[in-house]
Each structure stands twice: as C-alpha cells, then as structure tokens.
Image (tube, rainbow, N blue to C red; front, top):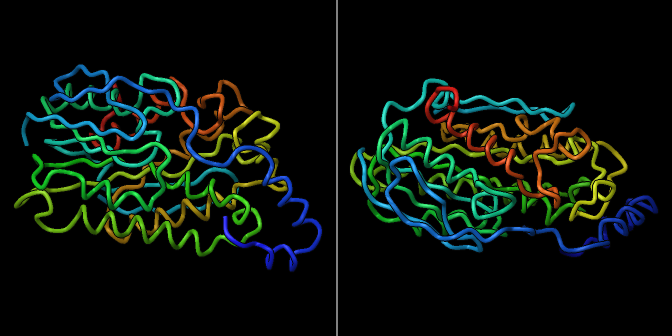
Length: 311
C-alpha cells in the first residue's frame, strides 16, 4: 500500500486508529473464487462457461454508445448510456474482460456464461472470448485487450468488470481521502484499454466495437461495516462510504464518457441487496456475486447490449 507515515502523522490519532483497523485481517484482493470447468465453443444458446484462476475462453462461429455521469453522495450512483438505450441490431462477438467477477468468482452459474447463452438466443451464434483474470486490477486490462485475436467478427460487445480490486487494495488511502493518485491511475488504465479497443480497424476493417463497463459495487450498501458483516475486508469505516464509491465510480464514468461508451450501473443495481439488507446478492466474502448476483449482472449487461429486458 506504500508509505503512509506522512499521512498518519498529519491526520492525528484518529487516523492512526483507523490505520490499525485497516491493517487487520487478510490482504484485500480477489478471494473465494470457485474454479469453473473450461469451455471453448461457438455459442448457440448453451454453455457452461470457462476456466477460473486466470484462464481464457474463446470460440468461433456466427455472424457479424453513449457516455454517462455518476454522483456518489447518498448511496446510489446514477448512470446512462446511449448505446445501451437502443441496443445493437446485430452481434458477432462477445468479449469478457476484467477481474474475478468474470473469472469464476462467487457462486455460479456465472454472469458471463448466462450472458453468452442469452445473447446467442437473441442474435444467433456468436463468437466468444473471455480474458478476465481473477485478482487483476485495471492495470491488466490493456494486456487482456492485447491478448485478443487480431480479427473478430463484428459487431463486438465488450463487457468489463474492473476497478474493485484497485479500490480494495488501496482502501486505507481511500478512507483517509488520500487516493487521488490511485483514482487517476485507474482512469488512465481504463483509458489505455479503451484506446486499444476502439482504435479504427483494431479487430478488422469496419468492425464496430461497443464497450460496457460496470461501476464498483458495495456489499455494505454505504454503511462500511465490513468487519461486522464478516467480510474479507476486516474493518469498519467510521463514516458512510458512499462518497468514496462515488469518487471512484465517477472517474470510471468520466473516462467512458470521453470515449462515448456505456457505463453499466452495477453499483446502482446491487445497492440495497448487501449483507445489511437481505436478501443478499453477494457471496459470503462480500467481494463476489452469489448465484442471484451473477444473474443480476448478466441481466444488466444484456439489457444494455440489446436494449431489451432480459428473458
């Protein structure tokens, strides 16, 4: 987490006490992932998904956005996206990037398998490439993009869940209000990935790419009482955490808006369904979605990509 002695010495004893609480318990990262059997196939309506623990899936077959804003005060961030409001008329490839939410984290069936199947029913056979990696931060996104084939069947829909590990791994700085550099780094990482994804001809002449990136959800629904909830992050925040999530999600929204891509409101969708407000959509580690949560993530992306209610 870096040298925070300067920050503690200038913020006094409350900060020292907070730092002590933050540094109790296991490191903040992707944990509790289940390993899913690997699969690689053209999707025509049935799939078991792909390998956990950093593997990638790909399949071949089948045919060939707007910005958003958020505000993080008061618990719920708002979002929009022009590309998701009307939906895509056709889809050739689904690409899944990001962290363990897209790589066997939580309790299946996993959102990406559900999404692949549902989109295949809607559009017909589609190609599928899953490069998400458990434990990764936004710094890994560009490498995930670069690992994709040089040619993809268009149009291409790219779904991303990333940024949660960046935030968790810097939670001490987040709660001390000293996370500006980390938020900027996350934004720069996302920007680099978007530049690569959206470069003209990146995946073949005339291949259109549409990006849908999720906001960071909060299992405490703004209360920050993670230790009380038995979470992997073994600390309780002395103040509501909505402003912190608003800051990070606002940075994601701004970066997507600069590129005209779609913000997927995962924070909004999950708000009110954390461990403080049963029924809970999170696994017991408070980090990954449970079965209901994965279905909700799948529905969220489906609605944005198609412009239709999820079946």
